[in-house]
View 1 (cartoon, each protein chain N blue to C red):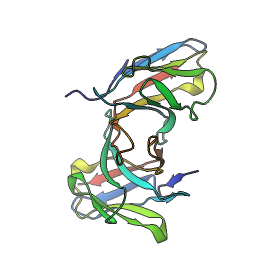
View 2: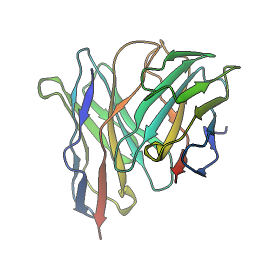
View 3: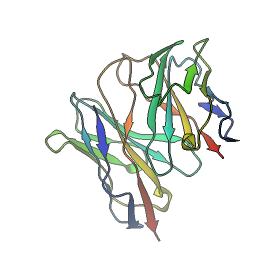
Length: 116
Length: 115
């Protein structure tokens, strides 16, 4: 079956603009994670969804960042008033039902965001 | 809080030589430990993971890692490097809080294979 997909693959935007990044998880996966990978760094956790609810948003850097998953499948990461420091690769991962042993997280290819 | 330290941001080995990528972790609870590989312009792929049980874990592509609690280490090894192993490798830790398995990653090690 299809893996995790993310769109767009690349996004260039001007400072101050609003952007939306989309993640389509593997069908049936209830858990969804967003990470951000800056140049030369490992991915950093942003937010975790279990179903439709954000169970842990402790990694969101500030209130310009917001994410939704209204139907428990597709998720959108929204960034308001973008800043140059937001430039990074945004990764999405999904996994099957947690709490039944450790679930493998399957990662998408990422969206490369460049803020000019 | 959990953390991961990967010693050596760049490692070069000759084709056929031993690969050793180092990872040390810090965790206040028994950790789950992972190694991921990232090829250029591709997503992260799980190589192997340690949860409980046997401390020597075998993964894909001939890689293995050993969990050493006394040393808080989870080093990745492969007996004989292949050109196709050239990639970025990330060690990660997750705590045993069922339901939220968010990963904390190290900064990565770029592996170069010398022909």
